[in-house]
Length: 426
Ligand code: AMP
Ligand code: GLY
Image 1 (tube, protein in one colour):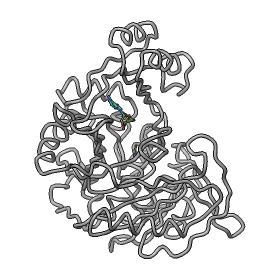
Image 2: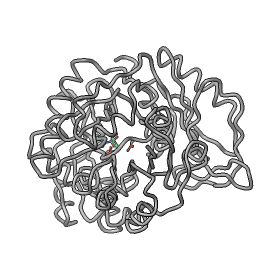
Image 3: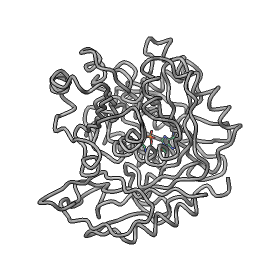
């Protein structure tokens, strides 16, 4: 099979590396890709946010059998529907199911209707009413722009003043554009053991009939060590989650995952693809923080290296609705990904700085914002590389990853030194 992956980041590079191991796969393509994907796939320079351009490409490339649509924005505009419309097989939800991420108001409504545990919330499209509700609830309180906002549309407000300012930013100043037409005002959840609360990402394969959780992982969203600084797209991940257990898996499967799959079916929005559950362990049990309609980034970078089963076989089973036939197996041990970012990320940062990569041992270097300019590898984004290491446990994987980091350089490179050390008390 010839397979094309849509997207440009570390997650797509990690998916391509997993597909490359499959005996079913001949040639790989990436639309548009980066310098890392170019090493294992043919990069295709087509705007994947333009459905007509994607369809034209697909029609002129009958040799490409299968499309993996990964990022949230092409899923939200229906790129899977467009490709299926011209007879292509795809991995990823259709537009009517991708709404589970594309509208937080939809997701909250779904959870309310089907009794799926999550933070209490109310949705508003009127600023005055939202303000009144925020004042009646008091701080701490969480504000979420309804639509897609590059992971930045969530404000955790510790004081009423912050909340009032945040509401104005989202609804009146439109800091996140159209995403702020509606706002979800949410109770601030607390963790069972940690403050801020302990979070775990559980990605799951589903064909709408069966849902199979992958190995767990934990992200580090803040830019600085000790969870300080601004929120980012994710500065590093590790797998598995230290506080995970068989009991939690049972609870999540039966109270959250299966009910969510069934709810989407009942709404006539069958979800096929990778459904991402962002969860918090609270004194009242596991609760949903967010759904994503896709693989997480950088969670995928630590989850897929642990997968023993052929990823292409799983993708095809999801497409064909026979996921229950596939036995999905995971390696023992642990995996860590340390993200290397451009200085100044997530605000202002430079592009085009030359990168040097020395001895990285047996680590895998995942490319995100990279390009080749005049034959040289250069930075081309905020998050630039991910250093991925496996080990017998998280400490061994961490040690190898940070040893490799010491041999990677560019001007003003920044990274967190504490990836993988949280939730040690279980
Ligand atoms: P989201 O984009 O919805 O995942 O939100 C980003 C981050 O904000 C989450 O990973 C949590 O750390 C935090 N967060 C979101 N909603 C809540 C909530 N209701 N209570 C506490 N923290 C939250
Ligand atoms: N790592 C969080 C996300 O992919 O949205």
